[in-house]
Amino acid sequence: MTVIALLSVAPVREGSMAGEVAKAVAALDAFDVSYETNPMGTVVEADDADELFAAAAAAHRAVDGDRVSTFLKVDDKRTDDRSAREKVDAVERELGRPAKRERE
Image (spheres, rainbow, N blue to C red):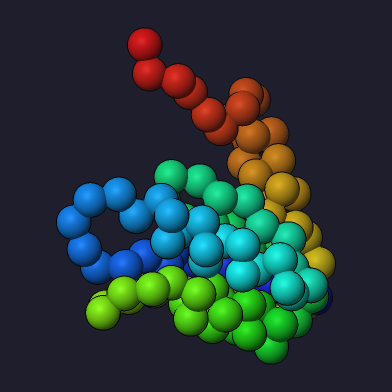
């Protein structure tokens, strides 16, 4: 089974959050997960939900601040082992092109 999630962790404050977001992403390295960060969050993959939730909790705890906002959207499809990359590949096959476009 593969569990895929979109994780976003950030302090609630004005100004750059990059340093604190980096701490959250670095916290994921202590777990048996793979991840890819994008401008809106980090896609995290694990073999089971327990590992994924533990990694997300560690990322949340890694951020300093009086107030921390965490969003976690989980896809726990228990009968399928397709990775996040395989899901994107399927969409790209349907599109007939990469699912990405740069603004001109």
